Every structure is written in C-alpha cells, then in structure tokens.
Image (cartoon, rainbow over the protein chains, first blue to last red):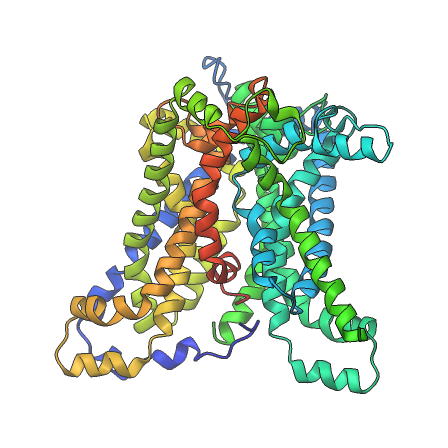
Length: 309
Length: 271
C-alpha cells in the first residue's frame, strides 16, 4: 500500500528463450485484440471531429455543405454562450478541484487515526462515489436543496436563518456542491491510501524532536502526499471536463447560461440545435484542454513505470 | 480522563459525524423510499414503512427493462473487456518487448480523451450504423472506455505471479492455455475479480454516453432516473424508491472492491 512499491522492472522479464522461440511470431498477435480497437477509438472519432469542425454540417439541413474554414470556430467564438461556458468550466473545475483536494487531505488525516468503528465510518464516506450521477443530482436537487421542504431549508429554519433557493440564486455553486460530494470520496480514498504508506517511525522521530501536529503535517505529511495529490488533480480534471449528467438533470445549463459548461454547450449545439460543425469546434477545444493536462499525467505515469509498476 | 482519552473521544465523534454528513443524502433517500408520497415531505425518521412507492415504480414504468439493460451493458462490456485484455496483458507480463512499456502508456492515454470531444462523430456514426439506442452500441463504447484499465490491471496482477512457478509448469510440459487456466487463473482470480467489479461499477454509473446514445429500448437505469428530472422529481417517495433500487447493488459491490479501487482508478500510480 505504498505510493512507490519497488517491484521488478519490465526489463527483468526478458527471458533468453525469446530470441530462439518460434512462438514469438504468434505471441505478437496477442496484442491485436486490445491494440486495434483502441487505435480505431483514438483516431477515427477525433479525425471526424476535426473534419466536421472545418465543414458546414447541419444535421437538419443536409443541403448546406462545403468547406467552412475557420467559420465554425468564429461562430463559436461569437456565440453568446461561449464566453460564459468557458468561464463556467474554469470556475467549476477549479472550485471542485480545490474543494475535493482540501477535503480529501483533511479526511485522510482524520481517518488515518484509529477510533472505534473507523472502517464502517470510512465506508459511509466513500459511498457517494458509487451513486450514479443522475441519482446524486436529483436527490440533491429535489430533496436536499429544495427551497421549502429540503433538508438544508429545514435545518436553516431551525437556526432561524432564511432559506436559500439554491438552483435559482446559486445555480453554479449548487452544481459544484453536488459534484464535489461525488468526488471527495475519490480524492479521499487515494490520499488515505497514500498517507498510510508514510513511515510511522519518521512521524515519531519528528514528534520526539518536538514537532507539533501542524509542523508534522506541513513538513512531513504534506510533502509525502504531493505526488498522490498530483494524480488526483489530473484524473479529476479529465473527468470533470466531461461532467454532463449532473447539469442535464438539474439545470439544463440554465438559468440563462449560468451552468452551461463547455461539455454542455457542445451537447446543446450538436444534439439540440443540430449544428455538428460548430459543436465539433467546441469539442476540439475540450480535447486541446484535456491534452495539456494529460501530457503531464502520462509523463508522471511513465516515470512510475520505469521505477517498476 | 487523561488527555489521550479525551483526544480519542473527540476523534471518534468527529469521525462519525463526518461520515454521517457524507452518507446523509443516501440515508435520506433510502428511508424516503419506504414512506408514502404524503409522508415523504415530513422530516420524520420514525414512521410506518410501506412498499407502496416500489409498487408504484414497477407499475408505472418499465423498471425491469431498464434494470435488464443496465445489467447487460455493464456485464457485457466487462466480459468483452477481459476477452480483449487478457491476451495482451499476458503477452506484456510474460513476454515483454521494448515496446511493451510505451504501448501501455499509449493505451492509458486514450482514456485522457474527454468524451465530449468525440460526442458528435460517435453520435453520427452510431446513427449511420444503426447502433443508436441499442445494447450493442453502449457495450462497444463502454468496452473502449474501460479496456485500458482492464489491460493495465490484468498486467499488474499477471506480473505479480512468481516467475519460477510458470517455469516449473513449462518443464512439466504445460502449454500456454493450460498454463493460463491451471496456473494463472487461480493465482490472479482475486485481483481480476475485483478489477471486474470496478469495471462493472464504472459502466453501471456511466451517464454521459447512456443519456446521449440511448433513449427507450436500450436505456439503462441512469437514463431512467434522468427521466425523473421534472416534474416527477417532486414525487420524493417514488424518486427515492427508483433510485435506491438503482444504487444499492452497485454500492455493495463498491464497498467490496474498495482496496483495488485506488489501484484501478489511478492506473497503479497509487496503490
């Protein structure tokens, strides 16, 4: 259960029989079942997205065809919802990342310590991750955040505070809260696994040297978690870029453009307004964003692989 | 009480309080499912439980069709994933070449593609091929989505098998298939089955592709629940009953596979 478990590196398995083995020819075929589908999956749809983004392509108006140059990108740029969508995407991803990482670290520190019933309590904390997005969204919207009967409204009423009409007044924040609830368990699970691999003796030695809990956390625990935090941030970013169901079932991108993200905008342009060309241009932007992130992630995984998986 | 005992007490209270807060929406959904539609709006925890809402869900919707679709899609894609992944994982774990490492990284990099980037072409291609709103259409997508995880996880479990055992088997004259079945299968079963659970969970809960590519015939539970958006969402008891049925089995699976989850979700970067 450590972040870097030293296991034998790939190169060690290079059996000498390899060179003379006639079966090697057949073994190469074993790669095909996974490589061929993934190769198609990687190239074909993306090639079409790029192609569509440069042609006139409306699903309802097949007569209007031809090369469009950068027109689709210009239309997208000029679309009233484009600016807000990019801004919303950045705010949404940024907020969810900060909330999930900070909460994940705090929870990991909390549940790294022993107390009665800890394992059951941990199961309850990670439970939200297994709830399908449409259920999370609707339960939160209708039962927890309902402005009159919702649990939060009843709670605020008990405290004598005014109720909040979450989805009318704070739509983007509401979506951020729901998605954070789903993803905190993910970051918690990874960070608590990482924190467990911290050397106990190191902690004890620091404590003997007179390090208080905050010093300990700042100079020993946090640096140890650095890599795991990096993994959480990068994997979440990829998933958060395509968050869709939570918005689709609660706000439909509204009110106005308040909760329209890049992913939702592509859906709205392509499958509601049927303009495949402009929607594809939006899709390309999402791909570019994701690629910038994934370069870092793949580089880190490659480093890992070289140290032994 | 000593200082240490006070600390332990505070810790226990904090630990359980946080757990209760996180679990509250699920708990609330679970008990509302057993309320009547009239009683659902009251915050009571003690009430006379009824199965009325479940009966309503079954009577008013094609619940079993959606559940069947969810099962077919998640189990079907997982099975297909393993059929495609095992040969490659076997090859890379036991007969690696210089290219194995970069092949694996490339496979993982296919997961970095945001779904929204390929939504439009997939929708159009699926439409042309008649795959829209079919079980096959969803199985293909979910298989491609989960295949890198299946290859990666199978590879890591295969490479944990001590090499001496395979060599002993080879000296005894076991062929590749025998080797796979009698030596590798029993040794890697625990790891592979939790990988299977992880893939099933991911496919079961996937909502981007299911909402966009299926509507009536092949729609899994995610799409069925989405149909409660409004105004049916205001029928709390029915929404809760339908949701509980959709969520409960997969949550139990998730709890069972908790330990392998981290490895699978981070591609082995954290274990």
